Image (tube, rainbow, N blue to C red; front, side, top):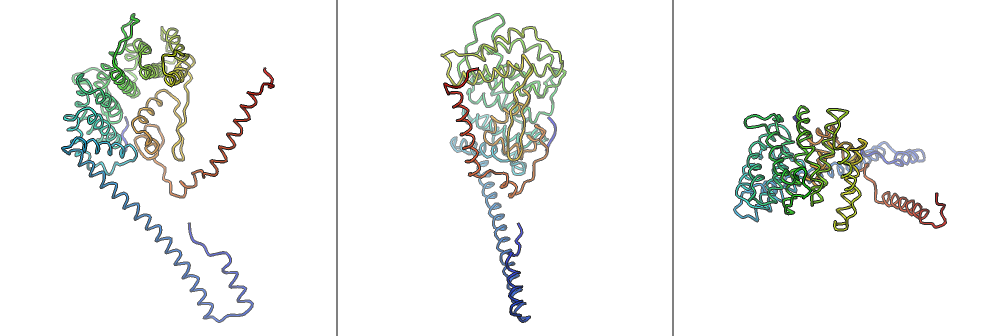
Length: 445
């Protein structure tokens, strides 16, 4: 990854009123001067009131920021508390704060203390505490960015993440969070993206191998028609591992993509027969991602089993089995229609993401995988980070953050009345269109 890091005017009738008064009954110089002084005095008073209001707003914002920082300091201290409930509450507060705000300056001088506390939670905690600690660690790396600070945080806790992830006796919830943390932290902060096998292995190589060892157990043996059976928690773990693995594929050197294609493209379609709908969907998206990477290397890329793969994708895109949940069927059909369209025609469904005054287009499977990874991590805070986080703006080539004042932000917002008019017009047009379709007297072409 690249390194980053209204003015007060005079009232319109005032001067005209004084001029007409002077024409009718000439006033003395003292009276005129008195009026002028009175006018400027009132103007200066109104200006001072406005300045006082602006100043008080700035003071209020500063006081609010200081209060928030004090609360965050308290949460960081509580991560080392003896009580498990206190530690979990502090970790949850930090997770919400890190996902909704950019706090680089605040965390820069506290990252080592927080890292040590997270390490203790991962080592000595259990289940939910480990899961929360891994999530906070991921967000800390995202806040620190791809510079030396983020790399230091990742390198210090990477062995611990791998240890929990590969420990079959550990909590499945903790292993799921560690799988996500390993993938995102490596994507953000890994300095060594070499995947050539060597003693010790690079950051990217070791993370890819670890994640592959997790989701690989869900793959069917070639020639077998019986799917591997796992508990729902383990299937969710395999889904998280596959998502992180596919995220890391987007930063693999092109020299290694061919080897990955040869090793994994025949195996991944086997996951399309999984019992878990999310694992089937992630497998389909990963297959589309591999095809996209292959076409970037070789425009005339050819896969021998394309017809068989397309037949399986078409069956999933039109699946109507009643034993599957209705929402699962709808979600599955939508995703696999996109995957099938890309495999057959090379067309990728474009998605527009609006945040503030900006708009970003997700028009490739690579950008789609990266965006969804950060969206799942940040939740509703993803738009704030797209606006203000320099690392995310660099990843998606958005340029430096826009400097917008309060007036520009207010002007960009649509009033409630305008929204009501727009919705009313859309509802009216939609009703007319549907009425024409439902009219039995309409001509059938």
